[in-house]
Image (tube, rainbow, N blue to C red; front, side, top):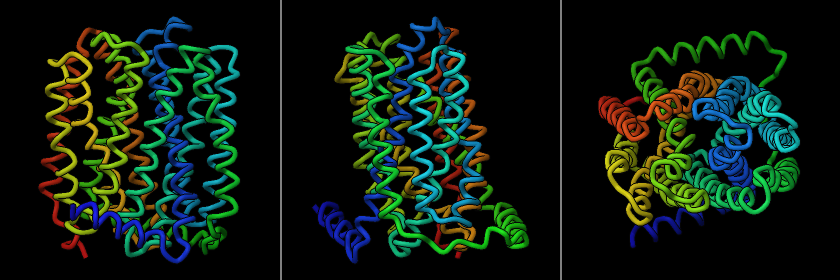
Length: 404
């Protein structure tokens, strides 16, 4: 009951003083972007069947999407520091809509392989600008604001993948992505008009940029940031490996229909819509260490039992246990953002997200190779071990209050 009461009070505070419309203008498009990205794993069996792809090759498609998303994080962060975040986010969403249109209209799988990294790069311009604008609008409640935004992302990931899967069955897989395009174009316009212009640094000030890079580089030599960098690398690998082939795993290994697999995949993200605001509030109140450990214990249990359970009910239980790890972003990204001065938050976030996401983007193709050799179940045990290492690293880190 206290959690519900605190949640209501936090929501009212976030909506106060006209800031609510900015939060919603930032959060809702994020849900569309993530929903479209997570529709790809649901559509992967259909693409694999149409173009006669191996599991490892199909996994490479997801790796390319994540790799494109990773490569763009650093330029996205620099631009967020030096340009208007609202304009940058609007352009990002519009470019993703165009990239999806190119995928839908692609005449061959070669074109799809070319366009998907472009889709990822366009999307990568959004997330850091989203964090820096929220840190300006909510300097006292960044964890909560970011948690709400990420929860909206999970609503998109809950609704869009099952819709995409249903359209793929009834119509064709291209319809599963095409349905998002008009919403993205509308969202781009909403961001352009509702998100206020920030006060960016002078983009012609090269000395300012070089100074920023030096300060950011020095920050990453601090032991807490070394630990956090390791945590994010391992987590990005885990996250991308798990989400890329989980629907396929449910179909191939657990015998679920593609529609039921997409529903379970959607419920995975639906749980995240609850976990992320709670994780954000926990970060604001108890610090990074215990908030992060709290959201990672359940996934370890869920991954260990996943290979030995069958049936929709037990698989749903395992899926929901794993879903608590979705709260990690509200904790880790708030922590990283607060380690840098406001004028270089974007660059700092861009560096750490680019490095960790580039390395982590190998997850889908590595996991695809493991699964292709008949070790699908063992792969999930490997992912559980990775999470246990993340928990150990988190425990060894100082509390965020010790870093001030």
